[in-house]
Length: 120
Image: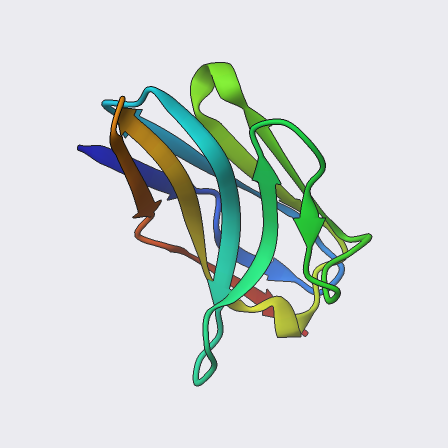
């Protein structure tokens, strides 16, 4: 079984910064891609940023230039550095991973979510 555990959410003023972390644990052969999604009240979950095991990350237009995704493959951990936060960034942020749990087992795994609140 594979779990993703997020941390780092909280309350911050507009213009401030937060860093989210997400660590994967369990039976893991490899993780192909990891990403961050968010869901604001009354809205659908949307992609924030995603990074493959090798290659360039991609970002939602709304966060380009402000957010940076990175990963530490040795630790099976992905990070999201969020700068210049805006009230519209307020949401529950979810970590996602495409995990190879065995030779023939591939899983899409979600974390439980961490709340980010940006006050104006």
